[in-house]
Every structure is written in structure tokens, then in C-alpha cells.
Amino acid sequence: MAYKGIILVLLFLTCSAALSAPWGSGAPPDSILTASSLRDSLRYPLRDIKIYGNRITKDKIILHELPVHLGDTLTEEQVRESQQRVYNIGLFNSADVVLWNDTLTRSAIMYIVVSERWYIFPQIILGVKDRGWTDIFTKGSKLYGGLAGVDYNFLGLNEKLYAGGVLGYDPWADLEYDRIALNRDQTLLLDLSLSTSRTLNQSDTLYTQGLSFNEISYNATGQMHWRVNQRLTVSGTAGFQSLHLSNPNARLTLNPSGNDNSPLVSVSIAYDSRDVVEYPMFGTWFQMSLSRTGFDQYIHYENFSIDLRRYIPTWWGISFCFRAATTLSYDGTDPVYNHVFLGLNERVRGDFFTKREGEDLAIGSAEIRIPLLAPRIYKWSTAPRYLPEQFTIWKFGIYATLFADAGVPWFRDQRLADQQWSNGAGAGIDLLFPYGIVTRFEYAIGTVKGQFIFDVGASF
Image (tube, rainbow, N blue to C red; front, top):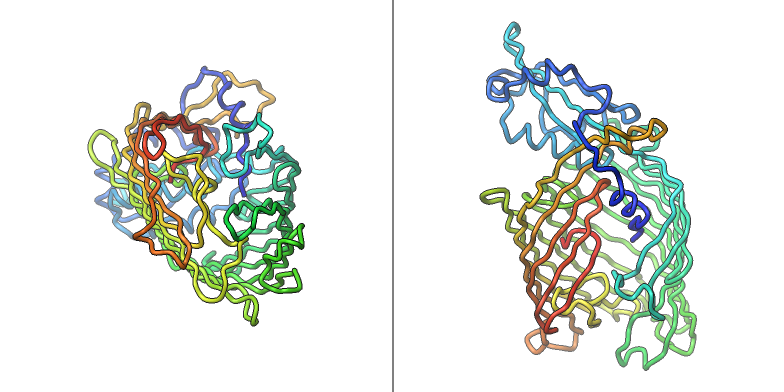
């Protein structure tokens, strides 16, 4: 669900430049922080873990993310990973891990210092579907807007309550209760959702015969996650989808009745060792999933997808980043509303605005990320007193990028070797803002001779 906060972006861009130290209230004394010696502390077993700054978040939510245990003799990698995993919970503006060497007991103490984000938002939703930023003031604008309420940290347990809806392009309404812990050690989590949407069909192949219509769907799903460890998660989904088309003359549902009502199930596995989720510089993301929709004579098709992303740090903070992904459909008949596209959610820089359709898709990217201003945490020292502390801790960063992309969709009855790939290469500037917002300004040359690109979110 794309609801990038344009209003929040404007707030961040215009906030005061009078910024200073990163520590919020509730941090341990400066004497503890400055006395820490990472090299010395690594010689001793870990005796205690102390957490500061989490006014709402329960300690156990933070402790469950740590790759260390009491009694461990820590490595530098474990210390770095501890800090990354606490930040990647997504509840904090900043997270710092400090080790203190207690020479009297010949043991180490880990101090975790966090600055909490604001969790409860009466949300104004303003966004653009399919990343169509350059067309928001034209007749074909994909702009939408609405209202929502969200609690990202319900009861301090990192559970998410969400209710919202939008009007405009592709209106929808959604009710979610996510990350519900089913056991004490937080390894079994449950997501529940109810949603409805009215989506303009994007197909412009012979399948639609030039007809314009909306897909009206109602969905109920439950998804179970088993966290095998801090990096590996196995998930299973079960749900039900009811879908019909606004133009019955299209006759593009699988069921001749015009209503495609079908159960759906899926399984997936995900591995995540990225340092920072919103803009990784090292680590690996891997996800593989298999889904089945329908089990009757009319509706029975499957989809397989795999997505591998690798981030390799080198010298001077520069990182080489790679992505390879594919989506494949098979068995039964793939309905037109399940087709995949380049030029909508998935894009190739160098052919960014050309829409291409298929039943299967392959895409790859390579990118070099060069820090111009490495991400830093600042405190807005002159903030008005009425402003909650959660809005006074900011994270900013600036990166230059060099990139190359390629991608191709195709239908099952076509040979991949016969298809023309979209491709491109170029350079850009990425701006990192608080609350995980990334904006990109890029120029690419490829299938199209040259194009300027503005987008929100990391490229991958």
C-alpha cells in the first residue's frame, strides 16, 4: 500500500537547521558513554543489557532482536548487528549500542540508547499510484487522497493497528491488525486484514480488446510468520478474494458468471541481513514465494517469485548493490487482472515511463552508492516546547549513485529469447530524510535517449 507522506516530506524539508547532539532524554550519563572502550569490552563476557529511551516500547521487543545473549564474549560484528537490528524494528529515530568495561567484575555491560518515533498518527494520505509523479497535474493524474488512523506500536508491543481509505485514482479501504505475537518469545506473528478496492485495469493488449474497466475486489487474509531466527522468516498466507469487473461486456473473468470468487494460499521464505532497511549499504535480502489461487475448474493458477538483493561495502563508505528478480505464472489460465507490468510498480531507469505487459517478468539492477553526507542523527535543539520530543530527533543523509537497469515482461506463449529488453544507465542524487523517507533525483539514458526521473523510496 503506497501512502508516502508528502506532507511529512514537506515538514522534514523545511525543519530548522539548528541541529545538535543526538541524545534524547533518558540516556545514560555521559561518563558511561565516554568511558566505553569497545576493544576492552570485547575481552569480557556480557553481564547485563540496559535499555534507555524507550518510554512506550517494551524492553522485550528490543531484547528479542538482539543476536547476543548474557554470557557471550561479543565480537565487533555482533555489536554492529545489534545496533542495526534495533533500528530496523522501525520504531526509533535513532538507536545506539554502547559497551562499558567493568574491570572490577571483569565483565561487559551493553547499553542500548533509543529515541522513539511518534507512533500514533491521524493520517492524511496523499500519494500517487504506480509512481506516476510527473503526471500529477495532468488529466491522466494518478493522484489519490484520504484519511487513516494508525498505531505502529500498539500497547508498546510493535503491533500495528490500521484503518484507512482513499478516494481519487484507484480508491480503496483497508483494516489491518499486524504483528500479533502468538507466543512469549515473539517468534510466531500473525497479520490480519480486510480490504476492498476499485482498480483501473492497466492491460492494453488484445486481452482487453480496447475495453476500459475497473476491477472491484473484496479480500480477507491471514498471514502467519515464523521467525526462525533474527534473519530468517517463513510465512504462510490463507485468504479469500471476491472479484468482478465494472464492465461485464469485457468477459475477462475466469468464471463465466462474471464473479471470480476464490480462496488463495501462499508460502514464502525471507532472509534479511541488511544493515538499514530503508537504504541498505551492506547485507543481503532474499525472498522466494509460491502462491496458489483457486481450486475449481475455472480458477486455478499459480505464481512463483524470487527476489535477491546484495549490498557489498567497499572503500570510503561506497557500496556496490545488485538485484535480480523474477515473477512466473503457470498452471491454468492467468487472468488479465493478475498480469505484471514494467512501467508501473516495477520500473527500468532509461525506459521509466513506458508501460509493458506480460504474465512473467524478469528485472535486474546494479548500483554504486557513494556517500556525500553519511547518514547522521541530529537533535533539533531550538524546537518549540510544545513539539513532542519524537519530532526533534532527525536523520539525514545524501548519496550520489551510478546505476544500470534492465527488465522484460513476456507471455507464456512467447520465447524469452525473442523479447526486447528495456534497459538504461545513469546517475543520481538520493536524499535520506527522517522516518525512513528517501527521495531520488536521477538522469538515465537507455531505451529512451535521456530522461529525468523523480521517485520516492530507495531503488531497491
